[in-house]
Length: 210
Image (cartoon, rainbow, N blue to C red; front, top):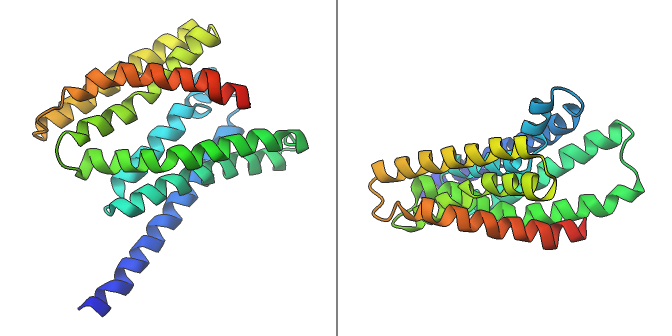
């Protein structure tokens, strides 16, 4: 039985890893190719929130926690590779962009495992940690809204992201409550604080590196 199941699990893991990386490459490519199209379509793809939410979704779809964690890292790295490969093919990526690509790649490798874990935990975890994981996912959208408003002064787009973040938080909270998570209220409680901390990290760490 063990020898029969092991190859199947290995094959399934390989298929999941390939699917995650393929989708990440496609997402990165689409982000680049949609530059200069509809402003809202461009913002919807050229957005850290979009990359992050898809990574969390991939984690939720992978049934094994360890694979979800590694899958999150693989997808974020593949997305960066897809974007910068498309940029190179479009002749807009030069030696000066290597540092930026390295920073985003490192950020993906650092945050991807957390996001893969968060997606897996919201769907399959136990106890109050599911609500914490929900906040980890939801906080990225209002954090980008804060960045757009407070840093870039794009208040119209900021309002959309803040509203979308509130809606996502509400949906996750309702799902957690219906799933019987006892401390589901931790999700809406932690999301605003997490968003502000993430915004500060982008402002004082990521922006300085870029």
